[in-house]
Amino acid sequence: MGALDHLSNIFDCSTGRSRLQKRRQLQTVEIKVKIDCEGCERRVRRAVEGMRGVQSVDIDRRQHKLTVVGYVDPAHVVSRVNHRTGKRAEIWPYVPYDTVGHPYAAGVYDRKAPAGYVRYSEDPRVNQLARASSTEVRYTTAFSDENTNACVVM
Image 1 (cartoon, rainbow, N blue to C red):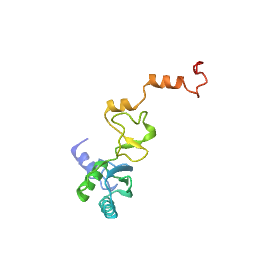
Image 2: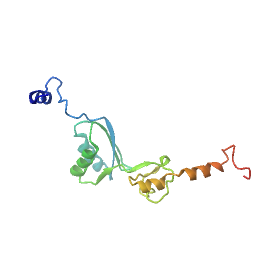
Image 3: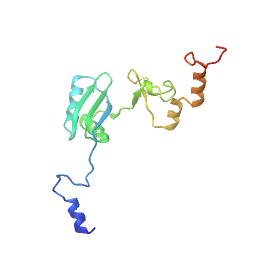
Image 4: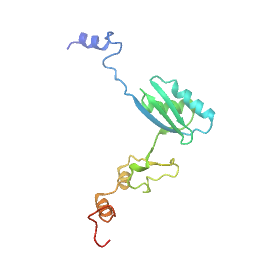
């Protein structure tokens, strides 16, 4: 492939978009940002709605949660909220309570988390504490009332 073919592929006007330009995927971005009043909510909404690719914006004031659906980059949305509103924003750090084996383990339980959520950690040592080991699962299921082959002593 020659240089002329390469340049013609880059500047191809037939599709309206360059073939080399990466397409963004439709995704849902959840962000934690402190929203106290209607003014804060309006300021955050205006900062995000003006972005290219945003389909919908949902704000839950009680959980301090901003949900953006669209063809956007999560890091760009966080930096835009930080810059435009002056508020500290971060990617939503919580997962539902049911997905964690030990929700009260150190490093997982967070008092500031909304009801029904616990903190998700990228650290494998903390996640290992949050999951039940196979030995632990084997012992807890062996002595349960639901297990028909449970110990006779029970």
